[in-house]
Amino acid sequence: MFGVGFPELVLIMVVALLVLGPQRLPEVARMLGRAYGQLRRASEEFQQTIRQDLAAIEREEDVNRNKAVAQEIRERFAEVEDLQTAIIRERDGHG
Image (cartoon, helix red, strand yellow):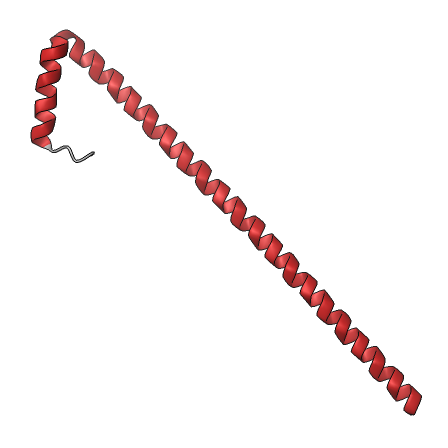
């Protein structure tokens, strides 16, 4: 947790107790706890959004790659059809 060990945490709590007093310390601790929770939730939401965006980009790249492969297959198929047509014409012309 930010490289803060137990001795440092105790020192922080003692200083906070001296500065804030025993009445305000629990209130401030609750406020800091809520703020930490909100920050953590916001961080998790941000990470989830990034993951979703990356997944969407990957899906889009897959779609584009698949379209390119499909186009190449169509072109090759057209070449085979042209070759087949040429063979048939040659055979019919010489047969």
